[in-house]
Amino acid sequence: MLGASDVRHGELDTTTRSGSTGEQLLGRLLAPPDLDDGVESLEYWRRRRQQLPWWRVRARREAVRMTIRWEQRVGAALVSRGNQAPLEARLSAGALVARTRLARWTRRARIAVLTTVTTVVLLLAIPAVAALAYLLHAL
Image (cartoon, rainbow, N blue to C red):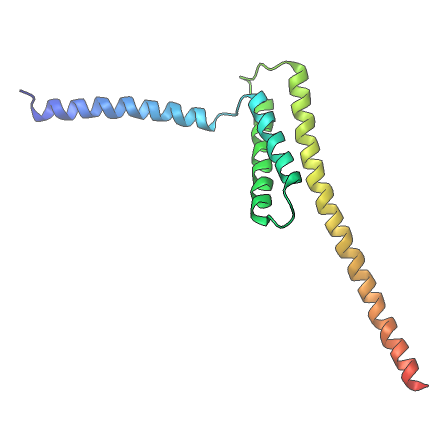
């Protein structure tokens, strides 16, 4: 017959075993992905964002967020010591990450330029229209 101390000891062993399994699982989940898998996922989300129609706003936001997340994960896989990928694969992955980041910054720069130009045009047009209206009213 098992005593209370035996039962507690058995529970402790199970917890310790599952705790180490949990730590191993957490370590695998937090580790950078395999470089090929990461590049494939990054390319998928990048392509998905480009192919979604403009009215699918929620899906496009998800694709943007996932692209950023996979950029981070591929970047981590590139610099991880455990990654023994060939140089060609590492260079192409680095180029893909750079290309997606550049595209995002280009898009942001376009929006900033458009906003600036619109503001300048409005700041110049409003006084010009007011002056023209004043001149027409004076005649």
